[in-house]
Image (cartoon, rainbow, N blue to C red; front, side, top):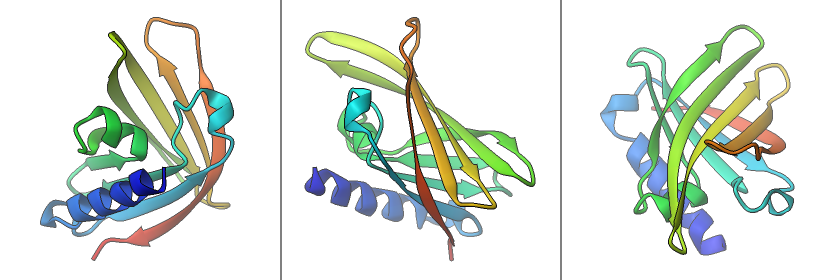
Length: 139
């Protein structure tokens, strides 16, 4: 898994360093208790957000595994004084089966806490966890 985490870092920073996100922020998050959630939630999560361009890029080991080592685009669902919530989708094909996963990550601005959830569309399953993020400006 460490190799995958390293690849997530390299891919996220390489992709996010492009000029399109030059004035944004990057959220580097560590998520706890992911194994108890069926391994559908990442141990590390990287979100790049450029407010001016209204662009969100998300990368984690799960995304890189199922999306040909490429991050995915996301959206800002909510952004206010207390929190910012990002959403994204991922198609996961494995062992002859596929699932379209819907993810949601909420960053609490005052505390740096993260709440994350993932749900396979069309099913009642919902995986949830929490963690902590460090926010850095992109230069």
